[in-house]
Image 1 (cartoon, rainbow, N blue to C red):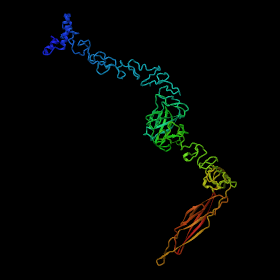
Image 2 (tube, helix red, strand yellow):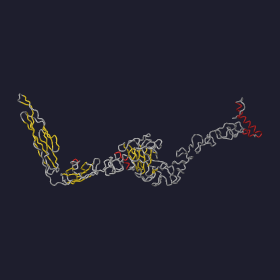
Image 3 (cartoon, rainbow, N blue to C red):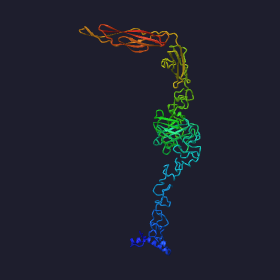
Image 4 (tube, rainbow, N blue to C red):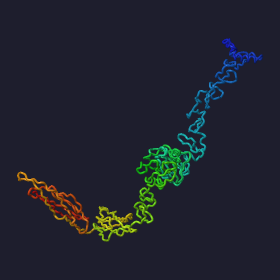
Length: 635
């Protein structure tokens, strides 16, 4: 086929148009060549209408000649000395995307939006192995057969990144510190990279929880919650790696790029919010997460691995204090992981800190609790102990020191002295009287005394109590023991405001060898007559009569006696159709006769026998009976 030159083609199609720029270009090329043009330069070898002499830089390719639009083919189509100019070149390597070839260089060479496609990516990190750079991630990023090369600076065999099986080296500048390192005790260094510093040296009680703010008012709960710990160990402690536990199953491990340390006998505050401007102006040394402190019931514990360092529990006010807007604080005499288990060693804080309206002492000494018995005398300040540092001073204490108010009654005085004595008149045999004498007791101020005797101990099997002491509030009292053995009596005297110390005295009772049987006397026989009016009917041949009225006979067995002088016990019983024992107290009693029928013109006697049994304390008994006759007559 014959290919027309571009000027001829344009002339044929656009004969009315002026010459094109292409024509002008070609003409200029011809003119510039002058007579120097050879036959070769004037010949159009590729039939594109432009000869080499006209500037065709490749007369073998009809798509190449001056002025033609540049095609994406890797050629200088317009013979301007540049290839594929003006076309997209994403990787800026001088080769247009349309003819570029993807190479493994981390660049989108062919401009298709994919980088290093079709090249292997064995670690699946999105970067072809051939272009990858080794990063510290436990993978072979550059496919050289090695993992994390270049990331073991100290040459201890552990990299900074670790992998699925081996944790990372936490200090790649020290070959003695790595996941396989040996922990050196008490040096504040985590040699084995497990997050815990100095494990193995922790013991229960190294730390004591001394304050808990579980229900703040100053800020919204829980962002104002905190707790305080106290170092009881005598050595500097590092908290990194310890675990905070709150019920139920809330855990937080203390982690920090810096060491969290607490010196001996120092406080440290841990809180859920470390910003003082929003947490109620609390200076928090460490901020934890995932742990909350319930208002009513909860537990708070600190662990070092499997070692429980300390634990406290609160119970909605049952034993521990329960408040709002005030922290629970342990008394400063109870800064100990064992003592702080004692509920009455805790109280509610009573002083605010900084600008806060809540009460507490975060990071500071708690002071003394008014609800705590500091001198262990059984009383605290709230219970009236006027000196809770002196065990000899409390309400009701003996005034043993005339320079102080021992009993907290507001009067400095000297208390009386009790001196109990078993009188020589006592017969120290079973059932015989023991005479107790308090007449030697005295008051240094000369005040009159009152007396109180009590039985504080008796032989096993005895049924005697303090109620069996006769005249127990007198200067002289008496008592008889029911079985042999030692009876211990206590005497307390009072001078009108102060009790003496109780003083005891023993009386040893022996077995009585001889015992006489007591004599029972139920009293003289008694009788009483009663009359009722009968009503006649059937012309006086018959009568109807009411029963005689009830009648009470009084019993008195006080005439009974015992030759040994023993106290006697009394027991009454009755035998009679119309009789009943309505009362009985010691030697006396009452028998009621009731519902005795009457018969006109006849006396019906209701005869009752009342029997008295008297028993001495040795068990010897005697009985006596009295006849009670109640005559009921109808008339």
